[in-house]
Image (cartoon, rainbow, N blue to C red; front, side, top):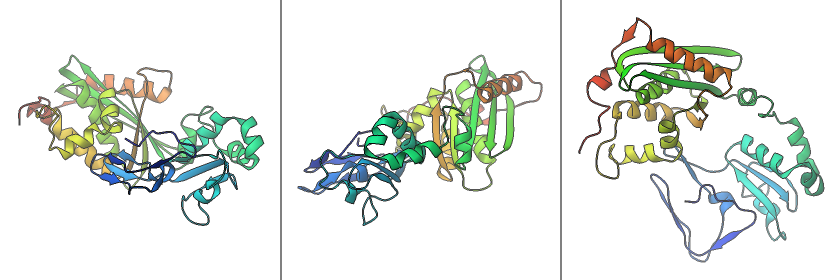
Length: 295
């Protein structure tokens, strides 16, 4: 898979096929292919091209928003010896790469990029504020189950600009994974318009399935795993992926109970909901959606 490949002026000559969740890209024979442009990821089954290109060593170092054309990054690295450049899907990723390169290298080859670095919000100083300043909705989620299955609850903290919203609910009979998923679903349901969302979750079950493309493959294969058995929690996966299709959604894994007030608050909300007297019935669990079965 092309996604994740590092490049810095390297090109490939020949024919290469790359399968994403729902697409096959074939590069023409004997054509020079630059990974900066053709690198593709799958986010909830959607193909996306890189949006930002940093040229550190090139004819005109700088930050570019296009690859081709007179104003594109490709022209700046073409025929430049040992060109140093890279493409990114988000401005945050581009800024992080500049920080990794360090001020000394930028001062030597691209002093103009130092200004961008100095003016960029620092996630290290505030891991959330930089995302909020960029207009993204930040959502923390957590799920809890007193027994698995057993009574359970979910908690979510949504932040949008200077607004904060908390969500929680408890259920009689459910599982931890279903509560983790329900937290994400209920949070997305509250969004009234198309949004750029960043989830912080300690659920490997959700984060890995989404970021590694597994959930998209389940949907494409009619909710069957590679062993031809149906997956668990089909009802919630259907709704979660549908809601994610309506927004730009990124999932980030965080370690459970790490020192972040929002994460800790979600844990408190989920546990309190599971222990509350106002419990609901998890209809999907009662209908057997949690149990994987043969096709």
